[in-house]
Image 1 (cartoon, rainbow, N blue to C red):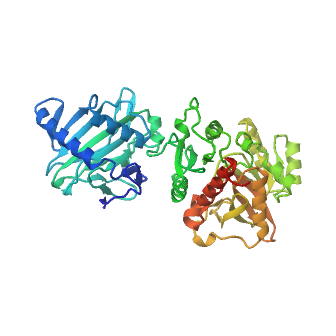
Image 2: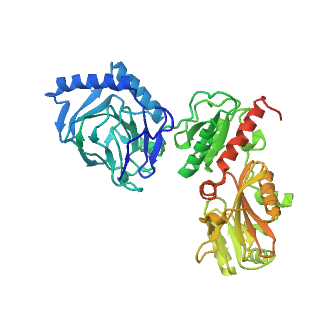
Image 3: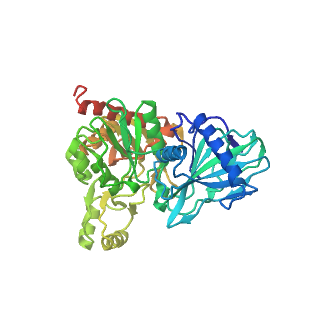
Length: 503
């Protein structure tokens, strides 16, 4: 079992450091000052003496506990504000803290903090330790995916965990217990955050409505709507390494009635692809803000005409046709035009190849198009390129900053992200990189994950350019600093747009 004893927070008391992904657990060391904890302990001691015989307090195997009404207590008011700010989430039942004082031999049995009051669920638990425990007394999470770990009671430490999965179901891995205190004393102050279950998608410690960081390019507004957590982490670290404030925007809680907090010189990176995320980006945008669009107005346009743009720009692609019909004669003609079977049907949206279909006969083409048009879907049909290597190249600005070979799945024509470090390399043919850059340029953006097929003959074909694109695996496995390249490009652009640099 891992015990988190020493400080884990990279920053001061206002920095939450994630220590577990499943369940989601964060720690902030030195969240409460020594003066605050000392004042709290004095008041708790007095309250314990006064309340020992009252119904509002109880004493059992889990120690002495009571609900502490905040109203009128300036110290508690201050701490309520501090914990609300670091969580970035309002508590709908904010009247009390729960105090628990453990003596040697006391402990709290395993349990889940999954409760509902007045239609609100206990989504997050924020636990503050008011003193160091001499021995024992850790908060144990025995069911975590990474293996059991415990958070030691350290003066001023805050530990936060989410009691629900993002889809609103109770998270069984959030089961926790207060380990038996062997020596010393342990006192905790608990803040139970009751909110709608939709708040289970929230990430504590992040919020977009923050003070302006000094200097142009000082704030990057990161738009998330279910983006893989590793993408968020590499972007947040890239900002931190460059002194850029990472302003997290959770689209699922976005207020479209609020004025944009952005100023000229700020930056936006929309990591999510949803329509809601696109609308949030448009709502936040103001003149002078750096985006990954080549023109400022690009934030408001998405032509959806990638194939036509590639053809106009001379980017090599497989022969393709927009298939708007289920007419049998027309489909026979399309199959002949594309060189015969097998063919590929590519539907818009999706990832991981879920909207790519291999068609090996006219019967298959007829039935697929009947099904597609019945459901209001229209694909592109493309020629199939046999025996080809599938490459992904990541373009930032006008340069390829990462490249790797994807691996073919067993009994499938589709591929998946490379897991071997040796597959993360740049192809020998510079023409492939040139095609990748050209594909991103014609889409009028400055970031793209470009999929390219390399045929044994040496010819290559661009399949698509994805914006935004998933790149965390290439960074974490391949060692490419893609997130750093994005922040560097946006920061330079922010300076120029705000008039402080050269064009």
